[in-house]
Amino acid sequence: MAHQSKILWLFSEDGPHLQYHVIIDEPMAAYLKDKYAEAIGVSPSSLILVFDGKPIQDQDTFDSLAMDDDDIIDVLVS
Image (cartoon, rainbow, N blue to C red; front, top):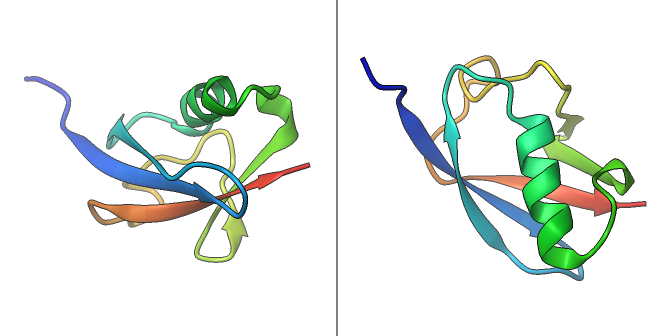
C-alpha cells in the first residue's frame, strides 16, 4: 500500500510561503527544514518549525500532531 501524503504550507515573516507534500506517518521536521532552507539559502539548523504555538520535534509526524491538509507551519529563522 502506498504511503498517504498531505499538503502543508510553510510561512515565515520575511520569506516565501511554500507548499510541501509530507507522508502522514513519517517524521517530517528534517525534510521540511532541508527543503525550506534550500529555498531561502540558509542552513537547516537555523530554522525552527512551529505548529499551533509549539516547536515541531524531530520525531513528529503529520498524524502525531493531528494536522489537517493545508495546515500552516510557521518558520522562524535564527
